[in-house]
Length: 148
Image (cartoon, rainbow, N blue to C red):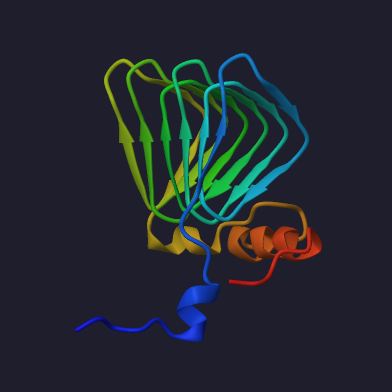
């Protein structure tokens, strides 16, 4: 009646969400495996293997590398997504975007250039010609995280 969990199932951590609340300031590169919500300020690049949400009071001064992103706040930097990027309500993005799918609501502001399509997975994110997934995984491994 009940299915027992294998040892591999028990070893996997549950999906998590990290939050930087309004009024908080984080300086430096930020790396996470799970979803990330930012309502405060981040001064540095973000590397996430999941979804990044920038709330209305969120401000990012740096690049974002993630699977997908929903932005309502402000970003000054380039955004690289493996899936969809959604610029909501009063979002302000000043930087270039590399994504598979881009959705911009009428009240959002986007100042930069956009590279779209499935070939976006090969987008260059630094001068060493490393694609962003390899770049993010390298950062995770250097930080002592296990490879996914």
